[in-house]
Image 1 (cartoon, rainbow, N blue to C red):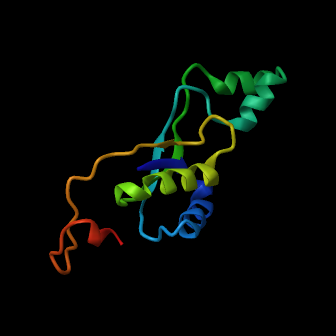
Image 2: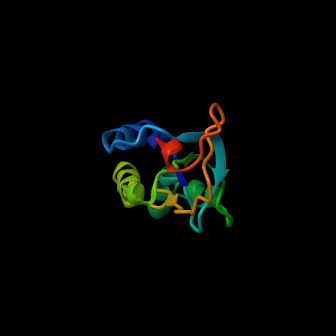
Image 3: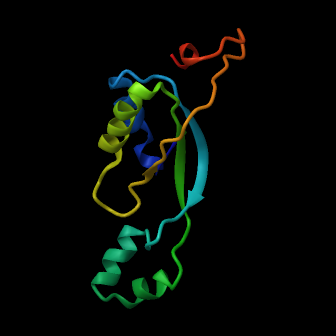
Length: 121
């Protein structure tokens, strides 16, 4: 599961496809925040001591739009997925996102009731 910037979605899809990963689910617009303030333009203005920007920042970080991706792959492909998502999303700035690697207990293809790793491809 990955939480990424909305504007990185197409780049992330391409990176995953280039890595041989074509199946994923993207959850529409979700909102979240990390520890820091997120608006880069306002932050830059605040660094330049522009009073309006400093006032706009306030004391609490604002929620920002994000996208949640769910990519379920066999264990041997986890590193490939993680590296592809990082390559597509890493800018070195706050808000680049998070990746959570979670265990998958079982997978079932609804159409055929087939189970196991084979349904992940």
